[in-house]
Amino acid sequence: MIFRQTNDDEARRLCLDALYEINNKNARRELVRLYRVEQPQSEWRAAIADHLRKAVTEDRRMKPAEVKAVLGQVGQP
Image: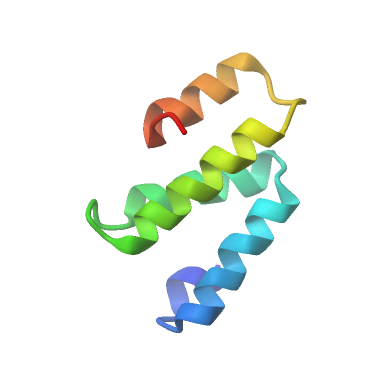
């Protein structure tokens, strides 16, 4: 994934935006994985959490258990 291979802010933002737009199970899984590896107080972790919250609240196809699991990791919107 490009996000982990670059320190370029714009490239990282584009990666997060693309995963948010794709918003399928694999894209959300990748966002969760990125969230877990970022440092707890990093601005990137906060940005990833925001993208995940938006993705979860906007996708009506997600099962309640998956929504609960994601929000349990990143917190409520």
